[in-house]
Amino acid sequence: MTADGAAGRAPAGRGRFVGLAAAAMVAVVVASNVLVQFPVAGSIGPVALADLLTWGAFTYPLAFLVTDLTNRWLGPAMARRVVYAGFAVAVGLSIWLATPRIAAASGSAFLVAQLLDIGVFNRLRRLSWWLAPLVASVLGSVVDTTLFFGIAFGPAGAPFGADDAFAIEAAPLLGAFAPDVPRWISWALGDLTVKLLAAVLLLAPYRAAMAVIFAPPYAGTARA
Image 1 (cartoon, rainbow, N blue to C red):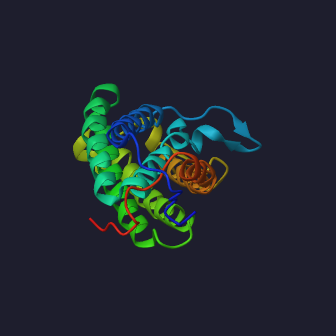
Image 2: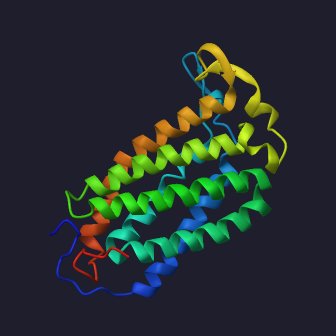
Image 3: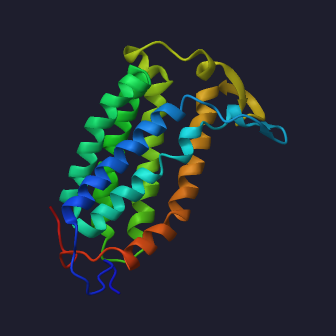
């Protein structure tokens, strides 16, 4: 099998896959926008998980998997279409299901991070099968976390709505260490840690999808 996952099969259901990919993207982003408002309860030793993680950290990394699979199979132009569709619908639904500030943060972070992911992936697509999705997801995750938490809970988001009192309340760094910092900073660090772990763990379903489902309808040279 080539680095682009070609296995000699003719592509089928191209239009249906694009629709499913866009729907999956919307579902992931909307779910993450809602779940990011709920800290994880409990503790691990001295670490209070509510000061470290929200449930949104566990769902959002799937957005990079959807983008990378679309990019690998159908190329960057189609991947961007899926991102734009997901962005438009997800932001609208997020305003309804979450808050305008969360929607603004999510929309900005999502669009910038996913387009970065597509660009990096496309530059590395001809190298080892794992390198493009891993590097693209890692860089996209760093940008996404920085933008999202900076706008959703930090000073940059003030024009979009009131502060979340619990998020800006001072708490031990990462739930256990001095000095005390606004709780959203620990959330951001915890969120990024989960995303980086997910970037590695999601290589397995990515590879399985390449081997079992997809055969690119092009020779891997698309640069659109």
